[in-house]
Amino acid sequence: MMNKLLTTLITSIIACSVYSAEDIFKKPQSYVFLQNETQHENNNDNQVDFFELSRQQEKDQINQRDANVLRINENRANTSNMSPFERSQYLLKNNDTQALNAHTYEQQLKSIQQARNRGVISEQDYQKQILKQNNAPLQQKDQPLKFSIP
Image (spheres, rainbow, N blue to C red):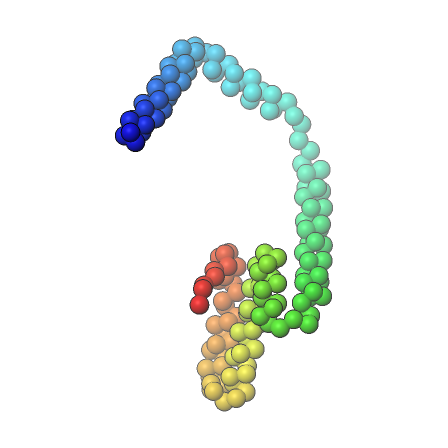
């Protein structure tokens, strides 16, 4: 039963594709080219004002920056009294990966400083890890946030 249904489905797909291919080939080639040319000519009729486009793009960038600043301030206000775990959960829930990356980076720096202050790591190891941490955000800018389940 399943084989019959599968073969019927495959043959109908093949028949439809052959029929549509025959329909395309029945049209005269000049008609197809004329249609493409008229669409191309219609696109060229629009006049483009590059100065207006650049002004609009500049306004959009300013609006985006303002929105980012508002979002950052809102996140700070909403997470000011939260524990680090609650803050990371809040940022995850709100899909704010930039703030979450900044939060994890800040936590890593704090843990390195605490390890140095306790005498767990030497000053040289501390300097190496700080350099590694400072280079890490540059490498991770274009990479998406990775999650691991413990």
